[in-house]
Amino acid sequence: MEGNAIIITQGYLDTPRAKTAHGLIRDTSKYKILAVVDHLHAGKDAGEVVDGKGRGIPVFENLQTFLNTSAEEAQFCLGGCSRKGGTHS
Image (tube, rainbow, N blue to C red; front, side):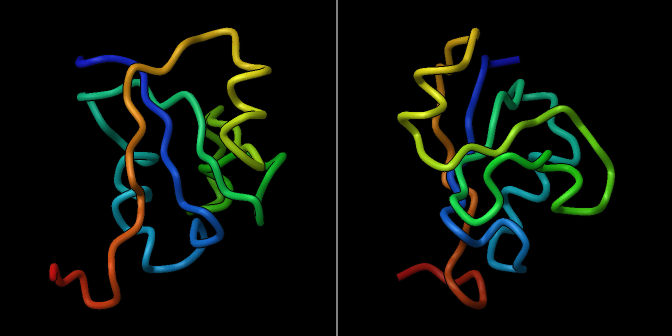
């Protein structure tokens, strides 16, 4: 395991554009996911938003709220969304 991480989805957590976030929330051995930052789903469990299964991963309105309230420190901040179609420019 590389360390603790948060995922940024900024309003896309419940959409197909957040497929990277969905995979990390469902299962990753590389990171311990501490939280997701998504203003539209703040206060919810990320797993419940993604597929209805609670995973104990809280969703925060913004990064500052996470930093002010989390007991654990994140070493990584991961972008959880991809461009439409998953293409790169």
